[in-house]
Image 1: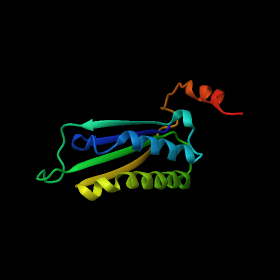
Image 2: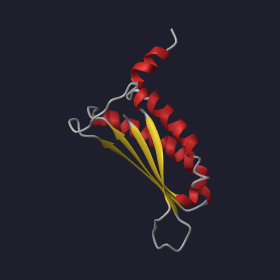
Image 3: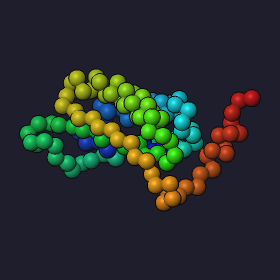
Image 4: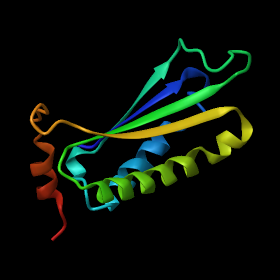
Length: 131
């Protein structure tokens, strides 16, 4: 954990530059010192069928969710969320200045008991650290 998921309207697939956003998101999350690098994942879901507002214009939206493991206090989560949302809004600023675009972001803390994981990436990354 954390998992960053961007649900995007398909009408901005090229302009959204999500590969660049995901690099920024992963760097931002790693830089907080709160999340282990080996658990950070970013992915997109493009929506071909959607309707927004009155449907009369070429509206677009990106709804982003950050799913995190439990155990961090509210202040820590809020600081990480604000830092990440600043990265997100900066990334989309140019596109939002050119078209109708709604951005939303939420952080979800997963249940501490009903959250199952098995990941060997953490151990691998420990072997990759420079001495």
